[in-house]
Every structure is written in C-alpha cells, then in structure tokens.
Length: 106
Picture 1 (cartoon, rainbow, N blue to C red):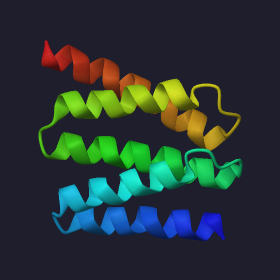
Picture 2 (picture 1 turned 45 degrees about the horizontal axis):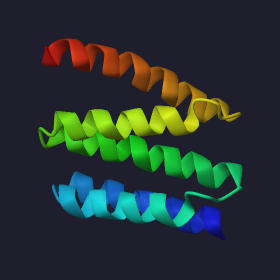
Picture 3 (picture 1 turned 45 degrees about the vertical axis):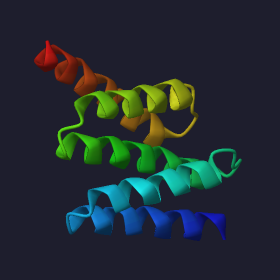
C-alpha cells in the first residue's frame, strides 16, 4: 500500500503545482519525502526521488534557484548509488541540468 499512497501524494503535489499552488505542492512533496524516506521498497524510493525532483522544479518555477540547487544536491547525494535505472536516469539528468543552472547563475 506504500506504493499507492506515495504515488497518490506525488500526483497531489503535481496537481497543486499545475494550478499554481506552489507552496502546497512543496509541502506535499516534503510530506512524501519525510514519510517514506526510509522505505525499503524500490518503487516507493522511485516516488521519493520523483518528489524531490518535482520539489526542485517547483522551486525553480517560483524563482528560488538556490533552494532548487539544494534540493537537487540532496537528491544526488541520496540516490547516486541507487540500483534503480529510473532513479539513475533522473540523477544523471539532474547533474547535467545543475551544471547549466549554476553556470547561468554566475
């Protein structure tokens, strides 16, 4: 049931973000991340990583670039050794994105 709840929470955050409720989206992502941080279920960890990515995107959308970078850094540190192909793809894409983001901030 953790997988379904985590997925529903992520979708709730996405919905809030889509309707312009950025802080509510961030709050939902934080709740998901905190609730399932220590889950040993791979698909739940995929949802946690996705929530962290979405949280970073949301910060970027509202112009909070430093918070965006902090979230992405935490995601990379936490999941860089993940065995999940989905998470590894996200980590690689975020590393590339962050390189460009940091260059543009200088």
